[in-house]
Length: 312
Ligand code: AHR
Image 1 (cartoon, protein in one colour):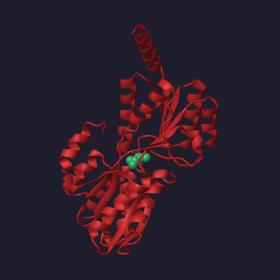
Image 2 (cartoon, rainbow, N blue to C red):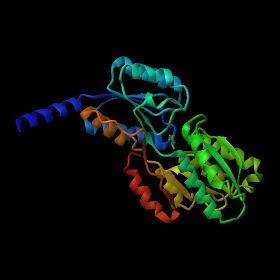
Image 3 (cartoon, protein in one colour):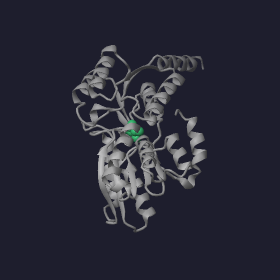
Image 4 (cartoon, helix red, strand yellow):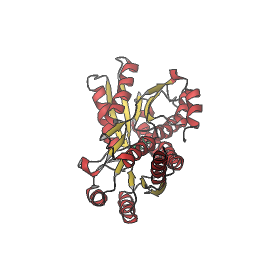
């Protein structure tokens, strides 16, 4: 028994001594800010020493952070990659020092031996769920869609677009008439939506908005209102994330649907690392989070309240 207690104490001590570097993209959205909050909370609860680095949307800052983490000899690295390409040499350096890397919420175009696992949603599926909702909602009626894309070159922007296009492919009544990046920000969403409205007869030609995230949708909703139209009625909105402000818009009848993406990517990532540190267990290459769609029928006020306590 004493030996067991000693081994347990040793394991607990070892676990509490681990250092993890986290290269975060920035704080472009409410979802991103919540992911940061939850990662810090999760690390603290588990006794992990988290070294946090905010890249302010720049890949070069993320690459510099990875190199700094390697130089510091961290026990693992969490990386939320702003874009999909250009990671090979930095990740090879981490690999040379046997530092496991876990991708959070976005994927990269690189050999999968450069990272231990990736935690996130199937982003093609997210786009398909959003597109499927719109197809069902318009029920055969003609619908011109404007699309607000996420950050150019990010895996999620590429895949959400692909999934949405897949969902509408067999429904010629639903057509994307304009598509542009709003860089996942509220101000970007508002600005681009204003230009869509101006180009499309004051918004009269637009039936629906597909936004790659809720923050851009919230900005776009403001633009729709300022143009004298009713978001949620004159222009339907479907989006991705499930942030509280979007639920509030749904509760007000100004938004229609969102596909939830949990901001708690760190929980599964730290579970994987703890298992690995305990006995060398290797995870699957992809840990998929749920993509449930919420509409005005799902008590958005209650969902808004619930989410306020979830890191947002
Ligand atoms: O990678 C996840 C996306 O990044 C979220 O949908 C968006 O809000 C964020 O900025």
